[in-house]
Image 1 (cartoon, rainbow, N blue to C red):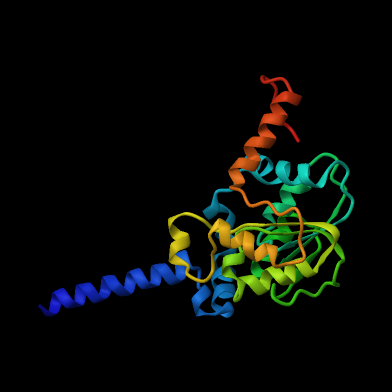
Image 2 (cartoon, helix red, strand yellow):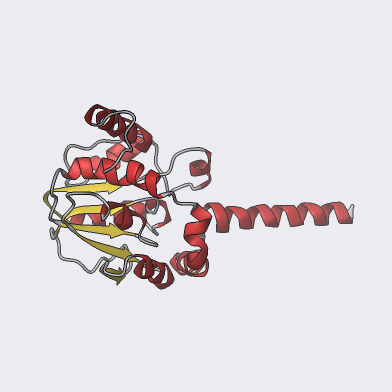
Length: 232
């Protein structure tokens, strides 16, 4: 009986740690733990995620570039930029003339970004208190990170604060089975729309990211011959 109880306890502790440290990435343990985890994994982060340059262009740069329009030359602040995934993709877009500023709370993640994108302006900052003027950015992005904010709704308010009039906010909200394991950190599409509607935003669109990519891909196929390499 005792060994059975011991095995059950060990399994339970293991599952708890997997939930807290892998799925929730330390968010319920405090911001310092989240930052520490990212600091430790930073050198291997890109390999773990297995980022593909062409997929980054298709899923990130093309949809966002379409929304920004041709020859965008404003300021884009990428909050929780990590190793610079979004900036790296956008800087490969033909016609993109904007200034991208990457922001993250993990110094080691930014160190990786600095090595891969030497000229990228990087700022170490708390996403809940961003060191930028109100209304100073034409575009603000925050991908796959909102659920790790101490207070996601307040985080959205801070992201919105940075937007210039008629600016663009692009953020993500985790869905799927693992979202159910992060209570209080994610929203249903209906709830997310309601949260966004409470902010000084207009033209709100909530849609699966893959749908946006498919729409852009359909337009790209109309613009280029099917047997050509797809290029931005």
